[in-house]
Amino acid sequence: MLKTHMRTHTRENPYACDTCGYRCSRLSGLEAHARTHTGEKPYACDVCEYRTCSRDSLKRHARTHTGEKPYACDACEYRTCSRCSLKTHMRTHTGEKPYACDVCEYKSSHLANLQTHTRTHTGEKPYACDICGSAYTTFSSLKMHFFTHTGQKPYACDACEYRTCSRCSLKTHMRTHTGEKPYACDVCEYRSSRLANLQTHARTHTGVKPYACDICGSAHATSSDLKKHFLTHTGQKPYACDICSSRFVSSSALSRHKRTQSHRRKVMYNQS
Picture (cartoon, rainbow, N blue to C red):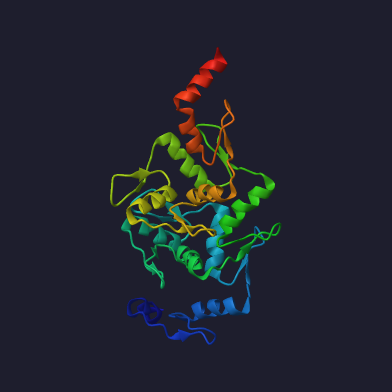
């Protein structure tokens, strides 16, 4: 036992997997790892149908039934049933991001986040909808998409009647009530409640215009700007004035029209 323990200090990993490059300090750990190749799951939960390849995993799973959370954070009130989860949580305090992308400068405190990020480079979308075939990079994205078929909106705002199919969307919406704007520009004083808005704003400094027209090649900073531009090719004017017959390619153009003197005179004439 002492010899095995000493390997935690020396970082010696004498036990190697014959199938892959995995190495560990304990024979029992290697035996558990080998089951990831064979698919064997000899440890079964007494409460539900959960099965796993390791005794430790079963022990952690059992806490989801008992509610036991023996691992506590020293810096906040966070508690968890897993030592590994606590270790990951502690990075929210230390700022440590040990998982780095090989392609770009992205770094993360979670291995799962890095694996998801990697798909932005590979284009892999392993989660597919059984109904329409749409594919997604994460299971949570697929779950949200599925609500578009069922019409479910399980996340509700406590302050108004807003409902959404996404916990993230609800969190963003709540900032309309709190006024919180956590996303700040590094160049100027601009702040936003949405990361997407900050990314769009940043292009006013960098000059990047990633959205290009297939017809004439003109480039635009946002997809909405490209969409409005495209209407100049099709001739469509989807925004109509409710007072006169004028039509416009954008809602902003319609708003400007309504502020003109001629429009105001027509409104006053109709009200008289």
